[in-house]
Amino acid sequence: MIVVVFPDLSADRPQGVFDEVLQQLAVPSYAEDGIVFGPFYEGNEGTAIYNSSFRPFQSPMPFLFVRQGVISDWKFFLDNEGLLNLWARRFGESAVHALAEELRRLPWRVGRD
Image 1 (tube, rainbow, N blue to C red):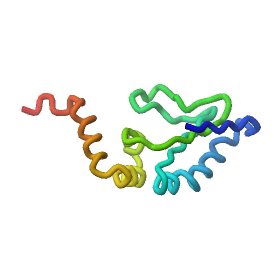
Image 2 (cartoon, rainbow, N blue to C red):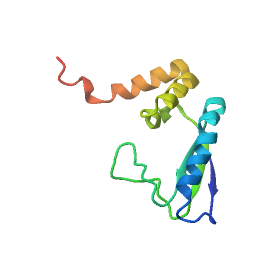
Image 3 (tube, helix red, strand yellow):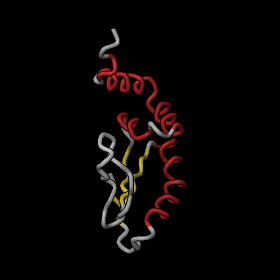
């Protein structure tokens, strides 16, 4: 993982700067090389996957993390068809098995009989 800190970026600019950077780099980088970017800055309204009240992407100092994507990243892509499709292409059959393994742990089958 690489963390790039932007100490001179004023508090009102990170969202716009990061949105532009991510639009230009994030999708192509993931599609070509499996690289994932994550923006952290004050006021980032992104929530945790399992707790919508927790906002882990807020930081008093703006930074981006950059890391290699992993098979369990599908959770981050559920609301973005394009990224979910890229994930499925990247991991292929193993993606289906990882998703099935996760779904088997959930109680969605309880009470269906």
